[in-house]
Image (cartoon, rainbow, N blue to C red; front, side, top):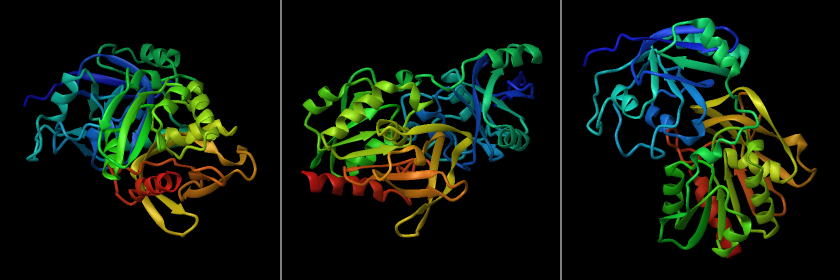
Length: 365
């Protein structure tokens, strides 16, 4: 395959710029620049709705060597605003591959830049924090791009869930002992698969579905999914979850779902300096002392100290920065985790949580 030699620029709002070569779609997009430390799983990362509004840089130096396929997509299309790597492989070596990563990005009109010093970029983000950026193959003027980055919309306060949630409800799985309603804030497909594997009938509803309609389905449990952006940008989901809690329905929150549960209980969330994104985050279970290696993707976190005293128990903690990774209500059948137990991409250590949710529903049934 001939290498596309068109130049491109990644410009950050603080004036820092990185020049590379285009290997995806030609164009220009803005978003928050973040990094992911996973060595594999780039297709799942690209198609994870939680990355809507973000330009993702991969720290592993070679990306794309096993191509892409139809089975590993976590949603119907790529969700990232741009994709940045050190080197994009044109050689595809995997029996499951349907096409190369460059062809995949071009097909879906996603801008990709390679030849970027991703180590320097990551060190800069870790020092200065995640920030607004523009990725472009059209505008060669760095000052112009920095200005565009400064003027672009950030993530704070924005409702990005409305861009990734389903437009109407649908049934994912018809068979199972437990009827689960999933509030789709940008749900990954593997979350739905894990629910189905744990004897659940799965109904997925749009994020704006009110509590009264969810209650009409008479669910045994409700799952609040992962999703993009600032949890304070989706007060309608917070209101729905607060009302469902009053009905004492078993609830399981994942990633954004944990933040929404925290807000529904009257707590606060805050933005992390550069977030947690990768498949190697150590999380300690405070009850057992066991440490799980987890897959994570979030830039906001629940402030545990802001929650009403005595209502919630912290169940898990991130060993890198001591942030809250798991919460459980002391009186209601409600629990949540900040990481991704569906292991796509990443380790399988936390898969037991779906069984825990099923057990909770069995007790309440």
